[in-house]
Image (cartoon, rainbow, N blue to C red; front, side):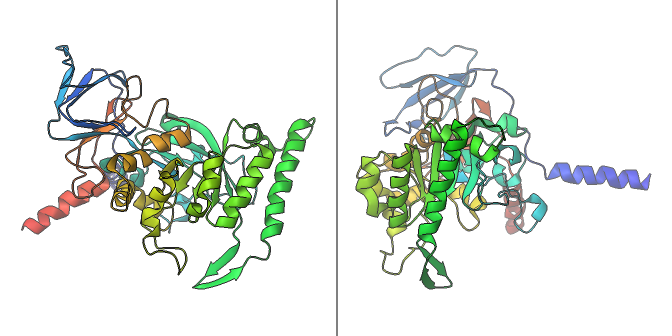
Length: 425
C-alpha cells in the first residue's frame, strides 16, 4: 500500500509540472472588437473588428468604415484600447529538441555524421516541452524546428506551439534541408586563424551534391536515404537553408546554388550587409542572426547587430529574425523584443513586425495561411494590452492558434505568481 501511495504521489507531482492541456478545436464563432489590429503586412487598423470561425478569419474590417452585424451566438471579446497581432514565428529553432542541456536523455537536436539530409527533426519534437509552452505568453506561436550537426544537418519542419504530439503540431512537414557552410576563419578564445581547409570543404559539398544528382538519375539499385532526401532540393521545390556568416562564404554559397539551380535562404548572415546587391539580385532572403548580439569583429560598429535588419530591408531583401545561439531555446521567447530593438535602430514598427510575422511566413512557405491577419487565413493571433514589441507592455490577455483559445499559464507564470506573493508579505 505504501508503494502504491508513493506511485500515486509521483504521478501527481509529474502532472503538476506537465504542460497545459492543448486547447480544444474552436466550436463557437469569435469576434474581437475595438482593438488596434497590426495586420503583419505593413498595415494597421486603428479600430478593428475581427471575426473567426472554425479556425479561419472570416472577416476583418475597419469598424470606423464598416459596421458588421454580429450574430447573437458569436462570442464577443471587447479589446478596446488593446492590440491584436498575428502569431509570431521563430525560424531556425531547436525548441522541443532539447529540454535541459545538462540532461543528455533530453537532448536530441543533432545526429552523428556529416551528411544527414534524411534526418527529420519533426519526429524528435517534444510537444510537451515546458520550454515550448513558455513561448506563448509572449506571442511566439509557431516555429521552424531545425536539427543541428556537422555539414548537412537534416530536414526541418514548421510546427505550432500547442499540441498533443508532433503529428498534431505539424504545420508544414519537411519544409527545408539545412547546410552549414564552412568558415573562412576559425575564432577561438579571442584568436583568429585562417581555415586552410576551406577550399577543400567547399569542394566536398560540390562533390556530394554531384553524387546525389548522379544517384537520383540512376537506377537506385542500392538505396541511399541521404541522397533521396535531396531530391526536392535539387529540383528546386524544397529550399536549402545555408547557415553562413562571412562575406566570402555568402558569395561562394550563392555561386554554388546558382550553379545547381537551388532555392536558397541565408541563415545567420553576420556579414550579409556586405553582399546586399548580390542577395537582392538573386532574390535570396535572410533569416538574420539574433539582434541582441555583440559584433563579430573588433572593427565592426558596436550596434551592427541591432541595425543589420534595416541595412538589408532598405535594399529590398526579405528579412526574418531568428534566436539561435547561447540559451537559444529559452531566449526564443524574446523574439518580439529583438524585433523591437530594430525599431530603435531605423525600422518602423510595421517593418519590424513583418520580420517575425509575414516575412518569416514567406520564407518558410506558410504565408498562404499564417503571418498576417487577413480574411481566409488561420486565426493564429493574440491580444496584447500594449505594444507587443516592447517587453514592458507585451502583456497577453488572449492567444489563439487556428482559432483554438490557448491557456497562457506555464511553469514560469506559476513561479511568478508564487514568488510575487512572497514579496507582498
